[in-house]
Length: 192
Image 1 (cartoon, rainbow, N blue to C red):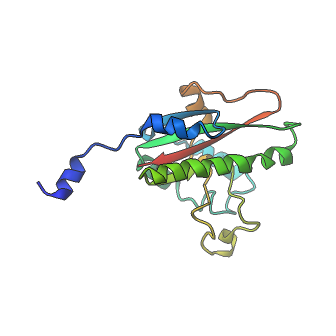
Image 2 (cartoon, rainbow, N blue to C red; image 1 turned 90 degrees about the horizontal axis):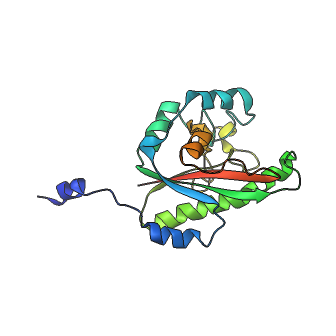
Image 3 (tube, rainbow, N blue to C red; image 1 turned 90 degrees about the vertical axis):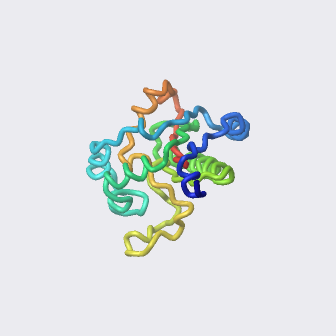
């Protein structure tokens, strides 16, 4: 049997959850689950909400239509057998203050990047989906017809790929709303 045949018959690499637990204990991850991507539902209705209600639609590389068709996004998600789905908590003085709420997002994005880096160091290829729309650049190169300036730092949002976050949260018995002036941010790092 040649080397190529041997590789194709090997089982998928499974994450060392004990080592991952040790890693995440250093970070403010509220809850996490390891998901099989075959169980992730992609819904057109999420894209419809993006198109009809989000001001970022068609304005950034992290949003539709730039991320690809819904079918392309689903194919990409399913090409990774597993994902780490996790949340972090932020507190604000007034939950209705959108500016204050969004100011807490950067810490979650940094946390998401760290999870991706950890998995990369462990030998996994990753694809990261995170919160909201990318806001690294003041003006996205997408509107200028140019490639993303920071493709290694830009994380498309979960909803851009048709992922229904609250369905995952419910199925996995995770918290979705802690009440008061707390915000739960969610991300998903797909890996293979």
